[in-house]
Length: 279
Length: 240
Image 1 (cartoon, chains in turn orange, yellow):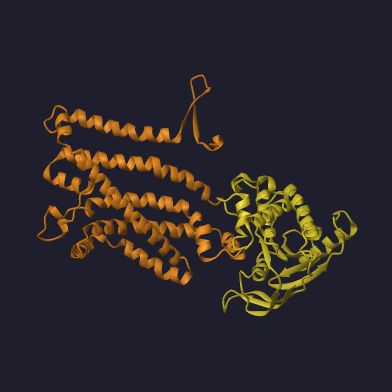
Image 2 (cartoon, rainbow over the protein chains, first blue to last red):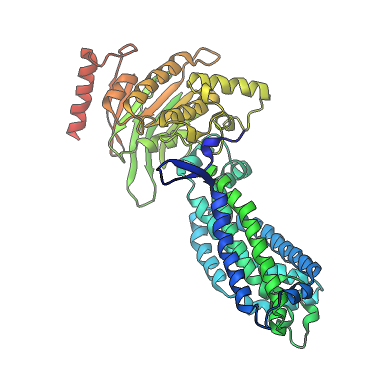
């Protein structure tokens, strides 16, 4: 049964000074997000409606909804696969870094440097490698993975360092070591940091898909046939071709996916992760 | 049995000496209190006894399991009271039923059984400390170490916990009828005299003085012997 005392509800006072309706946090968030979105769409419509640049019937007729759906699914799948890989890698690296002070002193600056190196500089090499083994999806996933992993590493390291010393001592006393310690103490303890790191890394993933899916730009003498179908490649190619309807449609798709994930996944996880915080 | 003889500890080779050739004559099956100023080495002694830290020289014998109660409880906020205590039995080979009996017994001894399904955030400071005590009791160790367990608590809660600690010491016997050996750090002379049968005054990593307290429980703070002992300890501290 839902514990009503734990629901965050907001009250407002009406003119008579009496407490009136309650609204919950999600309602406020949805309202705040959709009001500007509706405003922007309205402004675009008002600006373009008498202009040949934008015609709503042409917009609907020229959109290939099936392609958009497939592209959305493929892009989101690549991000999810890259996320899972980066989560596992980040946890392993965070555990190694925090295993002792000497390792930390050496590895953290190394990670800082690696994170700062622009991965796009190596993109032609990465694509070339995956092209050689005939696995172009791997190139996109790898780029997204490398972009996501460092945010997770640093947020996890920060979380591990925040675990109170007494908790670590108690685990030692009661013989909760190695895998048991990671499973019963460490991972739950850094759950808030995993969630916030995941939100940030997903944001960087959405930034990079514009590049990760448009492979032909980085391979000499290649054409769009090697591009991966996805929202990123649709955005880039439709922009290059002047297909503003498809550009707008894919932008709306992307915003929609990001919003839905935010409301139904991240917000819920953020609330859930509060129970893992130390006072 | 606990033997602490000529223990010396430094955190770094050329660093300051934290414990300097210290010997403590701990009485088994009794309540022993360590008092002294901050940084004098009291917590280091407990950490060495529990195996959390090593030492550079000396002889240490700790015969029997060790339970530790930390100053702030050190309980996991995402687990219920019951599950926090159960975690101490993670490697126990008992059946689930046997574990449940042990856990419930420990919770009852710590007077926290009514809150077994609650999360730590629903509990007061004193109640969280009781969870830490229950966790230390559930493993049925011979030795119980308490690191300033009442430091963060109000007076009323502290006095209730004094009684609980005494009840645990008097009634929590092992199979052969032996009581636990309790070693506790205290920041209060009155607290040390209320609970302790032997009081060790530590100063800069050395043993300054030892005081024996043969008064029976419960102790009356207005009793002449009590007042005299408190005064003796105060005078010794003032000489430092």
